[in-house]
Length: 81
Length: 158
Image (cartoon, rainbow over all chains, first blue to last red; front, side):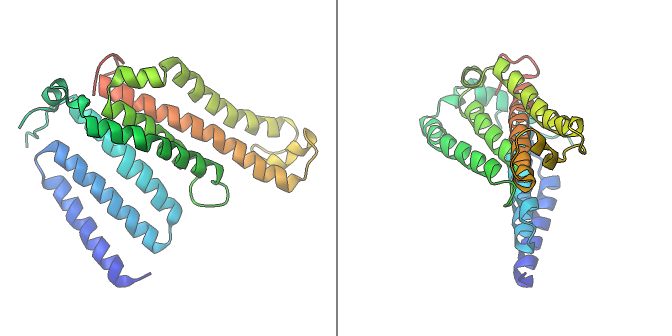
């Protein structure tokens, strides 16, 4: 547990979270959400919860990003609001 | 900005660099998935994470090539059979423990079937259950992707 590293990763997690809900392009939002999941995985691995970090890396950054892209493929890329 | 559907129709799936990279990395992803399942009971990981990794390898083939190629590598019928047998392995072993007189998922009672040490049966039983979980999760992840990418038609899609 290095608190400087924790703070740095947490700052990047918050930036990615705000970017995800601000970006209009849905494909870009899905990719930034993947980056958010990966940073959260780093945070959990750094805090010592390796099993949770592993699940976050496989499900959050891997499968859910792909499923978001598959869902965007059935709709339009540009968000209306 | 071009729509995703137009990009996919322009032959976006015929990228040589992408396809060669996928062909080279998929065996290693599958090997790592098997490693995570087999070592799941005494290190981080387990049936769920390993199954997701194995499913992601097959989804990578479907993403880089197209849906028919993915279905040729891993037929829909095999997918259904493996997913159901994975669930059957889990519940079968758990119910077998209950039928032999122990609790649900109490592997040490399986020593009545094959007389080895009950402690070793606990280790072996959780390994067998995780193989079932891994099979089920792998097939369900792949069929989730197939259904979402093709709108349930399973014919053409991303």
